[in-house]
Image (tube, rainbow, N blue to C red; front, side):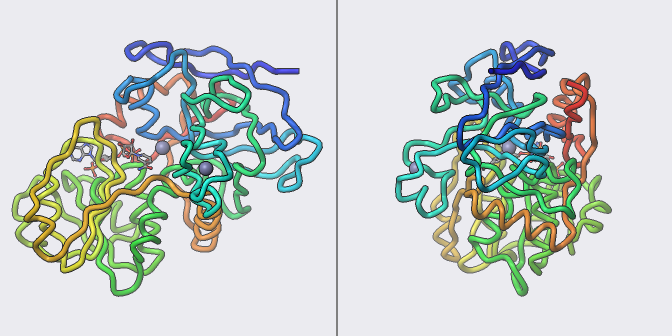
Amino acid sequence: MPTLAKAYIAVSATAPLQPGTVERREPGEFELQIAIKFAGICHSDIHTSRGDWSGVNYPLVVGHEIAGVVEAVGAKVTRHSVGDRVGVGCFVDSCRECVNCRAGEEQHCLSGPTSTYNAVGRDGLPTAGGYSTSIVVDENYVLRIPDGIPLETAAPLLCAGITMYSPLRTWAAGPGKRVAVIGMGGLGHMGVKIAAAMGAEVTVLSQSLKKQEDAIRLGAKHYYATADPSTFEILRGHFDLIVNTVSADIDIDEYLSLLALDGTLVLVGLPSMPLTQRAWSLVSFRRSLAGSKMGGIRQTQEMLNFCAAHGLGAEVEVIPASKINDAYERVLASDVRYRFVIDAHTF
Ligand code: NAP
Ligand code: ZN
Ligand code: ZN
């Protein structure tokens, strides 16, 4: 029998999110029903519910940083058991057959992974995300949350954590590497923690000096305010890797100029407007401009295990569901320290 889960729902691009319910199917043979305990608020939830990106279908339940406990399993489930601490990230299915799925890069599935929200599942029904009290997901798309990480600090790892871990691994952040993170919000603060734990020398490039003390506490060696033009003089040609988490339109040429020979600027932030940049910024110093999207299931598990081994979780402010709309405004004002996480008991 399908069940009704409590949820917070976006009904249009302009209305505040409001309480309601969402139907969850009975778990199929290979599916788990998860009692959601905490759901992180990712900036992508705001972009989507406010219609910044095209193709939004309302009503919509967002949320793709889900931490909870398995409460029921289908007859053929082998990977998880009732009572397990588990997580769900940005996608809940993919074709499983294409070259990228077979390589464990399901986020780049050639048929498009099935997003945790605002997509259509195999059952033909719209997917609905983590701002709710339960969710039903195929066991292959569910992660184990190691015991050492509290569920509320684990939830943001399912998107913010993996979105930073993946490029840091791809471009080999580690000892001897100078890594910069642009923007210290939800993604950025996890980037600082993970890159520092990997052994890289980490610099934060933030709009102001407000977050300097926190950045150093989280593992950064250096911190510069990008509002100060001298920052771009001082750091010219300095970094091996820069990861840009900003969703606003920033001057990419200025940041490319901070890369050393063969350095790479990786975009993870998703502005809604096209970017522009000059060829010279890349031609000089043989620089690269790249992008990175979440991470595959295997790498997400690797990231969770890495975080547990290094004692890492997100810095969170746990809020009741009634504060979601206020939290959205604070994220938009860069006033988040450093991830809002909703207590699912309050839906
Ligand atoms: P967030 O918590 O709002 O952090 C973004 C940070 O960017 C802010 O805290 C702020 O840091 C900085 N910033 C904001 N406005 C700025 C401006 N006008 N100029 C310069 N810097 C500015 O957001 P998030 O959840 O980390 O997400 C960041 C972006 O990544 C979003 O676009 C989101 O959709 C995208 N995203 C992408 C992926 C992917 O797979 N590629 C996955 C998840 C999210 P300071 O105060 O330190 O300057
Ligand atoms: Zn996200
Ligand atoms: Zn595929």
